[in-house]
Image (cartoon, rainbow, N blue to C red; front, side, top):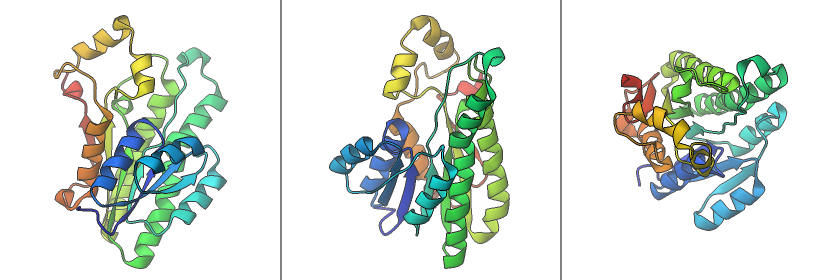
Length: 241
């Protein structure tokens, strides 16, 4: 029960990695504030575990600010929400690029600013984890906007760490390789697509959402008291190849 008495905001908590993070933190005693754009997903989550819920589309930054303020006070933040579109580079439009940057990067900045300002005002030391990707460092065909947004998120993480560390607020990111959410299972079910990627992973398999959740819990917790400004690969060794 290491997070007992702490309020942790998890964005993108309705599905996939975010849902696994929310459920894992609840088992560790956290009061989870689950944010998702899908009210139905939040309703089903609240039937599985105790949590507060906020429905918000992070593509709308004004609504994002209001949602973050409504969630306060927060002791730990997990910026997990993300989206993507699979479009070749030569066909990627500015509107698509802007939307993905808004959801994956800009909203993380906006929420973190609001949460961190409140932590500082309360004299509360805390932790922020941004859920990034190995795609922040490696180019993937048809992922122009996604790769750019995650590279930007890693850069944001480092700057946040430099500026917030003096207030006792630790900031890190986790960078998983392909993670077997229902969407990813469908997207990577073709062996012609999955096998080349698997050959680059020494552990020989993709990541389970619960494995990312455990890494997030570590970075939020006291056991990572001097882990700050890092991008932690959760990738079975993908970055070593």
